[in-house]
Length: 304
Image 1 (cartoon, rainbow, N blue to C red):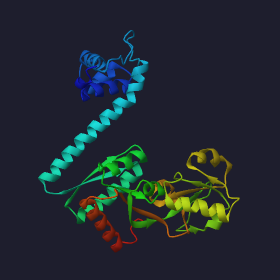
Image 2: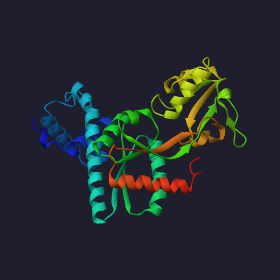
Image 3: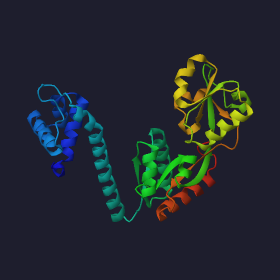
Image 4: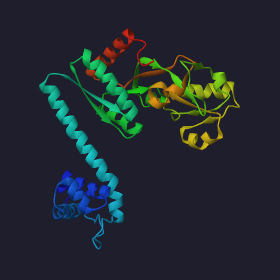
């Protein structure tokens, strides 16, 4: 197998054929001729040592091996793009004598949180040059932090990161909010107690182990209100039709369209938000964490 000859152009052509459903559409999107694209696929199949498409038909019909290769090709392209971004980022940071910082993000919500934080910090600390890298899973993020590929990530406090041996440096607290299914919009700011909450089936937004505050609340409800039904995120869709369901969701994860219906849960001190870092953080990560803590100490009501 001559896999050393495989390149990103061939992989990108293969993925576009799969996503568009035909060689013709993929060739148009890539601004090449269909014959050139077909030749790329033939070379890729030769390098791989197996057929990706059933060439007995004129359709883009994948073989069994081809179907299995699709997610691998997508991962390789994502990794290739990430490697280029990081290389360009590090070179630019070195040339401009700025402090490079690679920040890991898990999903769209926390990517937006990081972008908001970055815009705040960049105005006061232009010496930092940051690159945000999105990871597909918490396990992947943890591995990146432990290996040093990623220097920090903005996350809610959780046992999962603690068990992995990572550091958690808090910089603010945020509210847990409750959405009561079928209830009208809230007129002004309102809070609810755990006792009021216990009258409903309580659905948690985050999985067990992903938010320390919600895990503690689970234990408290079980101990103080043992008859209260607790629902995990995957159960909420099945339970919503029954009515009398309260969805708990951290304020920073609350969709904007739902804000008018949310009330603040008055229990404990709130959810700690902070930076997850490797056991031995880099100098730049430590400095950045300290600058964020200082900023939020001066603006304690931000994000609450």
